[in-house]
Amino acid sequence: MKEKLNQEEINKIEMLHNKATEEAFGHVTEHLAEFRKTGKRPSEEKVRKALTEGNKKAINYLDKILKIDPKNLKALSFKGFVLQQAGKFGEARYYYDQALEVNPNDYLTLSQKANLLMHQGRYEVAIDYCDKAHKVNPEDPTPLFTKLVCLENLLKGLSTNPEALSKESLEVLSKELNIRRKEYVKTREEFDKVLAKDKGVQEARKQLEELRKEKLRKQGYIVIEKKPTMFGKIKNIFKKENKTK
Image (cartoon, rainbow, N blue to C red; front, side, top):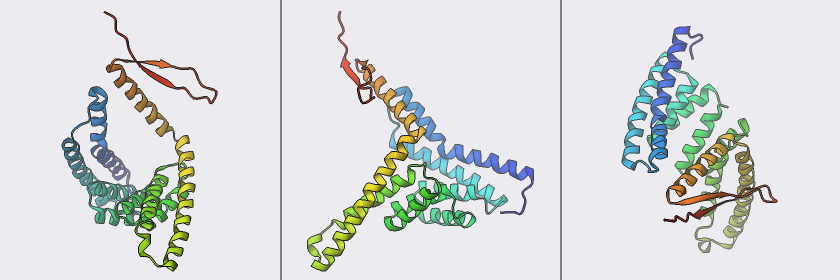
């Protein structure tokens, strides 16, 4: 990072970052709006094409930022994310590592690198990064979810072909399985607690429920709202509407 950026450079970097964000995520907003309007998912080919084009444009803007400020944390981390979305895991990891050299405790980079390592099948290392990210930001469920997926895969791997192992190896395996199962249960409980507090998740659930209701209404169902039960929950019953001529 430069010792000091002038105001013109700061403004340009902010503008370029906004454009990169728009290109990287713009297609998501467009496809979501289309889904809400038509109730149909866009084709896989259409999504892939929009993602590829958006990624190329986003990287172009991020490279312009890094030309001005080679140690720009947001640009380095974001470029890693975009490259990961493009399936270029090796390049993505390079930029995540560069970002973590600037700030070893950057939450987003730690979380994104954990996700990358998970996709590469490096579950043990991924879990370490999940723990680091969760320690920095315990309110975000993302690293906990990544950790759960890693633990599930580790448990599957440990459970494969036990009959081919010796008695001593089976004892070691049994201990490892118990440790991982306890870790999984603990992580799951923590994940559910964090998820329950996440406003974005709750809002997304509400929107999905509204979409589901609207779809059922179009199919001829009516929604009967019931009063809260003794447990404080409201159950919606969907009943086929009787149409009289």
